[in-house]
Length: 235
Image (cartoon, rainbow, N blue to C red; front, side):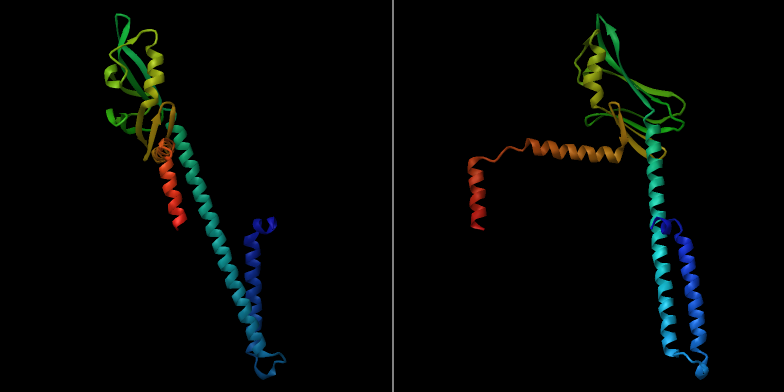
């Protein structure tokens, strides 16, 4: 079977050639008239049969070739998407406390660096449902873009102590901050240190929402269970 798979084109060609020779020979015999010692009707049927086999073989080969080509293209698309995702993951995101005054920080700086060889476009930074900032274009070649916001706008209070500000921002703000950006026609979402396609991120969000909804659903009360039992018994 493996040999047939490796040499299927050769086998198909030989089958077509054999069918063509057989059909030609049988066609010649079928037209030789009363001088033939063979049954003309029988050989006409054999010629039709061989032609049908050749046609079926051609259809099978075409279907296999189309399936193999589709599989190859899907693999190429998957490889290209994985390669582009790896490129998108090289972009860096840094959060740092700013505005030190009297031993406390009052602001947070957000810095996004494009370390790819392609332009990053349509950057949007979200915190929950609120859009904090955005940029139309970040040029390639380690070009950075960022902004600074008061800690009160980020839900971290008016100020953070100098010693714990960096760890508080890392643990409490960074997981909630969402970066959306486009790279070479694909849309990506970065949350914390995780970067993925926007479509995959949306599916993950919907799945997480369904899980939370199911886990928060209150158990049925005794009267509710009794009512359901009566309904089932009535059916």
